[in-house]
Image (tube, rainbow, N blue to C red):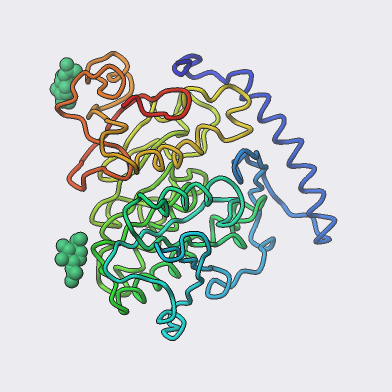
Length: 369
Ligand SMILES: *[C@@H]1O[C@H](CO)[C@@H](O)[C@H](O)[C@H]1NC(C)=O
Ligand SMILES: *[C@@H]1O[C@H](CO)[C@@H](O)[C@H](O)[C@H]1NC(C)=O
C-alpha cells in the first residue's frame, strides 16, 4: 500500500504526467486547429478516456462546441434476458417500437451511463457491464445503456461537461416513458461513472421538477470533479437527488494528491472511500495517471460487487487517518468490526448513511471476501 506518502507534495510521476499532458494537449490542439481552422482559447487538463487510454482533455471555450442534439444524439440501448448480446434501441415516446421491444415489465430496470471519452460500444466498460448483468446466472433485469458518445468525445472536456445536463434530461424523459409503459419506478437504479454520475444527478433533478417524483436510487462511480464540485449541489450529483444516493470514491483529488479526477468530498447518503478514496493499490505511479487505473477501478469494483452481498465489506469511519490508524476496524481485510460493516456497491442497503472505508487487493478479484 503505497498511498499516504508524499502528503502535500507533488510526486515525480505527477509532474511527469502533467508535462506529458501539456505536450499531448498541444499536439491535439494543433490537430483540432487544422481541422476547424480557428485556434480556441483553451486550457488543458488530464482526463482518462476510454479504458486503458490516457487522453488529454481541453478546457474548451463556448464557441468551440461540437454540435449536439440531445434528442437524436443520446441513444438508449436495451438488453434483456431475451436479447443478452444484441442491443435493441428504444426511442422515447415511440410506443410502437417500444411495444415491439424485448423490455420485460416485471423485472428491475438498470440504467448505465458512461463517462468522458467512453462509448457504449467500445472498450472494457460496456463489455463488462453487459457480461455482468446479462450473464445467464445473473438476476434478470432490463439493462439500458445511455449512449452519449457523440457529446462525450475527447478531448473537449467542457463541451462534454456542459452537455451532461441535456443528456440528463433525456434520461429523465426515458424513465418517465418507461413507467408510463408499465415499468415499476421503485426498481429503477441509475449507475453513472465519472461524468455519467452527474448525468444521473441531472436526470433526477429534472425528473423531480418535471414529473414530481423522486428516483429511487443513483450510484455514482467516482463522480468527476473538474467543473462540477465548485458549482454546488444543484449542478452536480448530490444526495438530495434521489431517495438513495451511494457514491464510490477511488480517485478523488485530495490535498495529498495533485492528480485526481474525482470528487473527494462526501456527496451521497453513503460515501465509500476505497483504499482512502484517492489512489488504488496496484495502480502505480505514472501508469496510474496515464491509464486512469484508480478512476476506472470505481466501475470495476461495482461490477465485482454484483455477484455477492458478502463482498467489499466497508466499515463506518469519519475519515481516512482514523481508518488507517485502525480505529474503525477493517472488515474486508482484517475482519475487524464486521458487525457494523455493510457491502459497498450493488448490494449497499438504502438505509446506509455516512462515510465508509475499506481496503482491497491489488488485483482481481479485488475484494478480500
Ligand atoms: C414495484 O417494486 C417494488 C419493489 O420491488 C415492489 O415492492 C412493488 O410491489 C412493485 N409494484 C408493483 C405495482 O408491481
Ligand atoms: C467499530 O465501529 C464502531 C462504529 O464506527 C466504532 O465506534 C468502534 O470503535 C469500532 N471498533 C473497532 C474495534 O474498531
